[in-house]
Each structure stands twice: as C-alpha cells, then as structure tokens.
Amino acid sequence: MKNEKYINSIHRWGRWGSFGAIAFMVGIPIVACLIFDCFPSMKLVLQSGSGLLAMFIPIAISEVISYAPVLGSSAYITFITGNVMNLKLPVAINAIELAEVEQSTDAGDAITTVAISASSILTMAIIALGVILLVPLQPVLTLPAVKTATTYMLPALFGGLILGIFSGAAGKYVIKGKLLAVIPAVVIVAIMLALGVPLSTYQGFAIVGMIPVTILAAWIMYKKGIIKVEERAIKKS
Image (cartoon, rainbow, N blue to C red):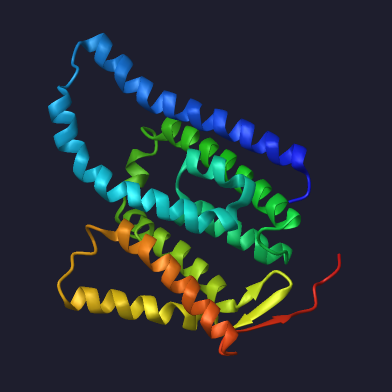
C-alpha cells in the first residue's frame, strides 16, 4: 500500500487493540480467581493447557500466514473478534469478489476492512440481542426444526466459500487451473493418513507444512503453463 500514514495508524491501533483484547481475556479469569480465591496450581494449568497449546499454536500461526494476504488491514480486528474460518474469511473473499478488486492492493484492503468491520459490528449486535432474548426465545430455539436448521449453517458458509474458490476470479485476473496446485498437498496428506499419522491432533503443523508445498506447486505449474493467469475486463461503475 502507498499510504504510509494509514498503514502506521492501522498497525498502531491494531497492536493496542490486540493487547487490550489479551488483557481482557486473561484479566477476567484472574479477577474471578481473586474474588473467589480459587487460583489453580501452575502444575494443573500446564497439565491441562499444554495439549491445547500444542494443537492451537501451530493453527494460529498457519492462520496468520495464510489469511493475512486476504484480510489486509482487517487482520487485527479479525483475529481479535474471532470466527475467522466460518465468518470473517468468507466475508472478506465475498466482498473482494463482489467489488471485483485484487487482494493485497489499496482497493482490496479498503473493501475487506469495511466488510470485516461491518461483519464484526453486526455480529456483536446479534450476540448482544441473543443474550437479551435468550430466555424469552428458549421455547423457539429448542424446536426440532430450529435445531435441524442450525446444523446446516456452517456447511452452508463453507459451501459459499468453496464456490468462490472454484470461480477462478482474482480481482482483475482469472486464474485457470489454480486448484491443481493443491494436488501435491492432498497426496501428501492422504499418504500420511494411510500411514496412520494422527493429523487431527497435529492439524496445525500439517497446515503450516502444506502452505509452502502448495505455493511451490503453484509456482512450478505456473512456470510450466499448467496454471494460467489472464486479465479480464473489470466493470466500471
């Protein structure tokens, strides 16, 4: 991006926001433990948390590496508010597709920032409304039809995201054959599963490892002419 003042302000406020979010996340349980005098022992914390950290730290690192080019300046608010894979990433990709802009550009960054910000505000408003209406709506939420419908919400979100990936559109370019780049990663994962490697436990490490494999495969296929990038006409408003 060209606007250095804007970039610096985004990083400054993003870092302060991240520190503030961490302070609230850690501070609330600490205050609760102080009030009720129920601090767990450090040994218990390490025993219960080491397994979770081993799984989620690699996942968090892989998400930052793989999602940051798409999210741009909105990466800070995305990782602070959460729901990255099932909400914020589809919102960003859909906004880029609808606006017909490129990722990692000034226009793409502006579009994703507005889209993610609007999504975050709407999400918080819905959560607040849900908390207020949780008890009055309890009879409705427990209906079998409502329970059945909610099980399809996450698949529907992923379905929309996958359809966007199959389109091949990337701003003012059309990428033909881009899904071929994931074949080496899929083959490697399939072999590891066949060998009995428990990838469900080490999915974060698997994602981190497959990112360079996919990038390398895409670069080689592009050089060989298997994956083609063509410019398309952009609609002018």
